[in-house]
Length: 142
Image (cartoon, rainbow, N blue to C red; front, side):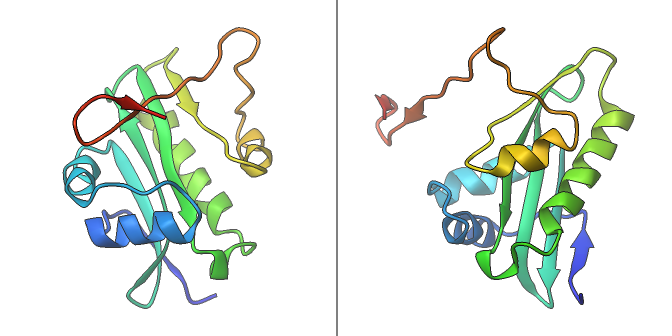
């Protein structure tokens, strides 16, 4: 495997493109430019110069975190890149998060099997994940 792991931020264009390739919802390019630089920590995989995987941690930097934007280009899935990135994200949390910190994530499809390997458990019945999208006018949409 000639892929390389970096602790770096991709361009907003790469970020938006990889999310779409991986079957995730689209993101506004301007929002991506701002949001990426507000990450607590980010790991990416590149094949040469091409972005092929990413995952990041967002939150307040001390007690509340969310693992977000875990994505691997479908052409590179099944090669352990997601597991490697999750390992790096969890290592960062174990060093930087305060004792008792709450770390959440949204597991799409079979991704829950990967996250369980790192100690994540369903939040139900104690709590239930919820979401809301905001449209361009600032009002809620589904």
